Length: 229
Image 1 (cartoon, rainbow, N blue to C red):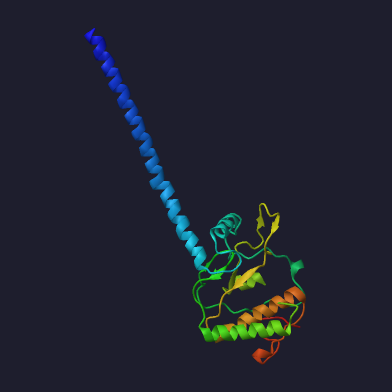
Image 2: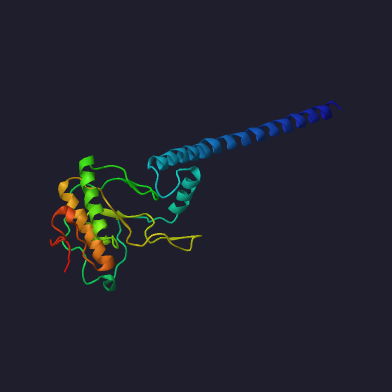
């Protein structure tokens, strides 16, 4: 009888210990999941969201819903925005392609975001930015109906937008053409002329019409950088 009671107590103690260990293991697994998975994800989302807000307004609402939309679009973004889009000879017009575009001497700037898509460093001084802005506005004003990615990218003057040519699931179309390129901000006076050449070449490429710009005092450039016959 005593042995039976002892066995019963031993069984109850073992069962209790088993339940305690089971609870502790579950707690340990849950704690580990929170520490090693949930918290890092929360920290990443928090930092990534404020990086998104730091880009400023433009393209997507500066809200958490806008951030989630950008996270979805990232799934379809280019792996390498420095890789030029595919091109064939049939796409080349008679005029308006860049020939001897000089290589950009500065290292590439840091670029972030999708919408907005921003250059985050190597920003020009206010005076240089103002001169570029005047030249661009003059070009647009005098050519209201208008305004080769591979050369621009390879020479270090720009890069493709992350969504350039990428089909988006759920939308059923590409939001941006394959040749949608960001041209980097100028770092000195000489780069303004090169950037304007790139814009003129783009105008020839799209519309086959020369772009005049009186703000620069020379009209359409005739340098060997751009063909404008």
